[in-house]
Image 1 (tube, rainbow over the protein chains, first blue to last red):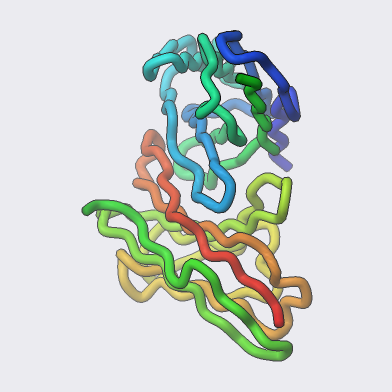
Image 2: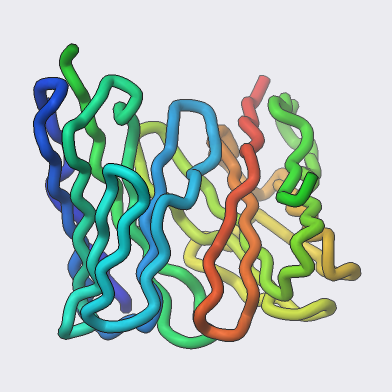
Length: 110
Length: 113
């Protein structure tokens, strides 16, 4: 079945540092999504990607749809304490269901 | 306000009892989904529906049932056959045309008494 590997599992960084995380798939996708989830809340959509090679920014966040269509990357620049949370990637091919990574837990030290 | 609503926020179930979690969306989305999230874990798909009156099992459908009688509503019933129902349940919706994003509701936390 479909496998989505998200790394790293967790990160401890200092405020102001940049962060990178990525997801890889065993199959190709035509949609990649990145979410942030705070404790006890539903995931909130950060960035959506629809084309191979696409690079999209949302404030301090930048995500890329890998050329092979089997991976995606999320970067956060100049991290701040409110960036703390769990970041999930999700992928989809055509009309099929979405597949989720296991999440990257981000901790930011002030 | 456009979006997805889930109710209740917290739900308590007694042993042997069926409970139903509500999910409503006013985004005019064709597809709706139910996920289960356990502490410190990712999302696991329970059921999904791409069109009214049709739904498919996800990866962990045993002990759950759904209905999709209206486009905007996709209730999930946690039956007594689900032996470990304590979890955070998330409803989501998306357009079904291949390049639509998926949006989540605020979640319902189910606890067993």
